[in-house]
Image 1 (cartoon, helix red, strand yellow):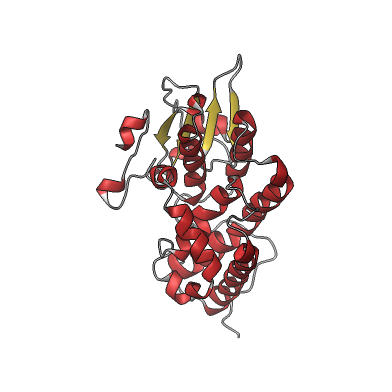
Image 2 (image 1 turned 135 degrees about the horizontal axis):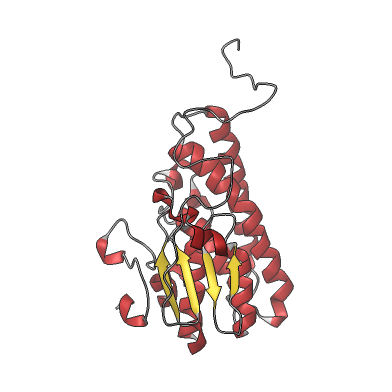
Length: 273
């Protein structure tokens, strides 16, 4: 144990801090954001948090809410575009997704995916069923609190950390499997997470836990975590994945992988044909 890391009395950023990480906020470059023709302007990337919002927008359009037409612009977080002044003006936390609603007299800025989902659901009166409103919000906020343990915890140490460390991988694998068990028990006697109706809770949870179930997250993580044990989550995951709006939404702001699945910008339904 003599070679183990010992935290200093006062922490300072390491000289070789990886990537774009810094301990300060605010814009790093002066960059204006593009603005399209629709009232809703989305600036995002097809990560799980970004996909939540594009799924909801596509579901709203499929349900006949024409006011949900939107322009989606890519934000390449690996290149630091989230630190441009225009983006920071919408989201001072420099995380995707960010949305600007220009439908009123004054633009409304929205950041944090859960906040965006709730705002849009209330704006259009959809996917927040009155009979299960509280339960929907319970599970929406469950996702917001739980997914960091899956993403920044398990995903980081299992897939991205510069070295494999047993303790954090074990800790976050344990927590991820516990979360899957929470979902599995919840879905044992209902078709959707919050009850009998499809809601923004499903749209928030599926891009993380559905993607994990389907093997689309963190390489071999699905096998490593034995996710097939969670049969009710698997059924729910497959049901959500079969929805045409979900299939469209997960392609928006995607600019990597299979070219047939990439739609870096979206300005009309024709872009997804």
